[in-house]
Image (cartoon, rainbow, N blue to C red):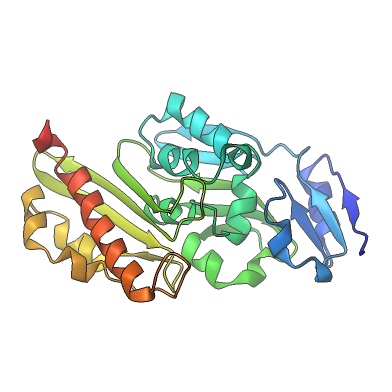
Length: 274
């Protein structure tokens, strides 16, 4: 059995020095180690001692340290940003023991099947902030397109501009509560009276991993909320899927479109139901 060297740095600078060379990778919650492919890894840099555990809100902008767990984020946001989409998505992802273990930095590094983070990142215009060889801020689409960005690089935080005061809906398609989602739907909106000021819609789990449904967003933005009934949501929300244990590509595409429509009805028409 292959032996791995472990390092436990006390500073980000020390961690970045250890990551140089390409065969040493960061370790946080550890839930993705089985999928990382350790045959090419010689050492792991544990991030537990690094100052990367925090929730900060400033003028509606939210920054979350990479070492925060799903459970700690969901609990913390209930106090500072009640109603935030991340509360629903992270607070119901996978099982309770794993929510207490999975970190946002670790999840954002690979966006594994259980992440429940990809869709919310897309609609919240989330940025991955990193230091090291490829240090900088990246939107989620750029990050998942280029895996080389992770080399000799450490995710330090996730940043969400304009994270407050949204009406939201999150849906995860599963057979049982702690199962991996076949797909997720993330919807954000702001409504002025009966007019849709802004709406953002993301669908994850298809062949493209995550997509913003821009055409559907444009069809609803600036219109009366009841205009939703005039829009062919099922057609505009259709994206291609691969075959999964939960169903055929055609089935998943159809079910996902239905759930997008239901989320939009929940968000845009909720005031009319009161």
